[in-house]
Length: 464
Image (cartoon, rainbow, N blue to C red):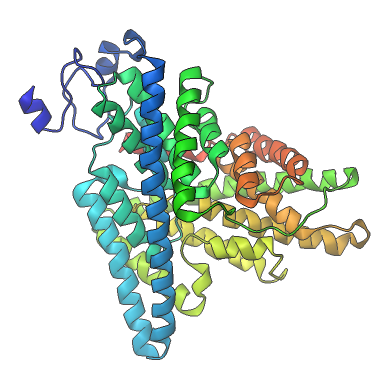
């Protein structure tokens, strides 16, 4: 057993909270291995103890998530100040900015490759695979790599979101809390899911969305023990996060009147557009990954540096276009943008997301896709207001609704999308339009046979 522990493997099944055979962490589990130790063979532990451990895991997830947000804010400020300062150097400043951001992206890719390969990308496909016992649970060294790599990658301007690292780090913290308290696999699985939800709650100050995300996306069914643990972990995480960051919604939305019945067909059409945009997003992202794979002979650090340099070129001329994109989302919710400019912002950000995700540095997809949803919705809202001047259309309302609709078209988790956007904006007047738009946004890609993005990413992960 001592040799197994030293190798980073799992002790025999007689001990609680562990797997029965020796696997390298983060590696696929074989069918024969899974058959030897099906989860239902292990009875669930004491529910009260599980709840206490879930709270402790949520506290850890809230703390690491809040610190991660603070670190990203500091990195964004530093990048913005550097751009302003380097503009005074003319062409020399431009070259230096390219070098700095390329180095940051390359360093993030090197950390992942060298220390924790499964810290790459969003982390949600990894968590889903671990819950399904397709991958072994995460090792503890994933947390510092995900944290530092995420700060470097997003701080270097890559179009990635904070929620992916927060979710994977939260899942890892809660899982290892279960191991520490000697919970068996049945309970550690619950804690893994609950910690992931706590990570999402912390990333967006959205506790209800964190709990719903666990049931709707991660386990895709209602399990009472997971529901209890997810609520406990998300509540604890938000308590810690709000102590550190305060209790303001992520985005400010001007007062919006509830749309009349005559507006609902427009939101149906908005959902159709979001459904097609979701299919396009998924296929563009997967194309970016496949394109990156064609250059596998090049070290991943070189590919990351090239993307970082390209992002730096964008940042030189339009600093607000790079990074996670929250300022762009807020601008769209404020109604800022013209019919001519908004499509360009959408297409440029879509290309940046695909390139950024393709180099496998730590970073999520939720925040970037919310940017696209807000921009798409504002553009469609402005078109409708121009075409139908007598209907008193609020384009900002379309931007808000499209955030949930595009999330639904990409992820296929409509309840999570609706709750998430509602909590992030503190707005409830657009709930019915969001439900209408999410209906068609989910219908379109389902009829087209497009797979939800995290199903596709998990399949790629297991193939590799």
